[in-house]
Image 1: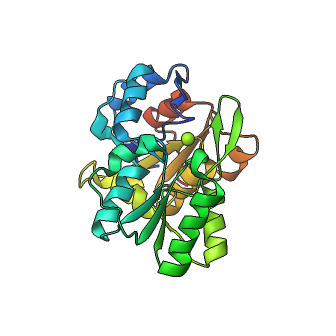
Image 2: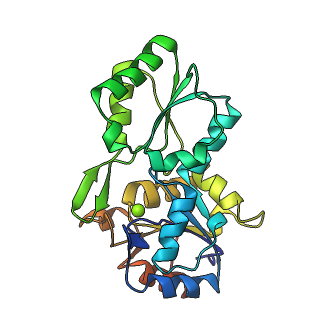
Length: 257
Ligand SMILES: [Mg+2]
């Protein structure tokens, strides 16, 4: 087991659920920082980097804004590189990350979690752009479902898959579990970090843990947030919570995946 030097940390379901921090996580994060480099990686499609930062501060986490790497920030980079003029299907709170991007005469559909926009008129407009105007389809991520206080909710993946199904066009996916996303996040930590001594901690067995393992990192599944019984049978490293995951890392007890 090589020693871990960099840790990617999921936010929702791992450090907090909505505005409530998961008990003990603030102190555990401070302890972890004494041993390794950290980066927060999140598939949020609803909230800008600034809003996420404010929420984490409110939850009592000591964190810098630039330490948060989101699928929205990665999507902005992709849009700029490809000169996309998007038709956005995103929550209004996410739009702050896309300021200044031209949207007239759209040549791409950019879709994230936006429950109030998943209606017939918006989805049909997106469908026609892709089907009739050859617009590209960009998914912030294809999350199947996510956890809120009242239970599981349908993720954007259901709607992205619907557009793929009806248009015959495959979406370019930006966030977790894409290897490029994990690579881009790790790169921000400097040249010395590589996949073999990095680990991802998250509550989503597919997008966090199996995605990281497929990208060449190790992964630790936490039994908080969206975790459900049976998820733990799919992976090697399992912790009751982020607090225990930190103990595993510091104690050099993360097994090779
Ligand atoms: Mg999560």
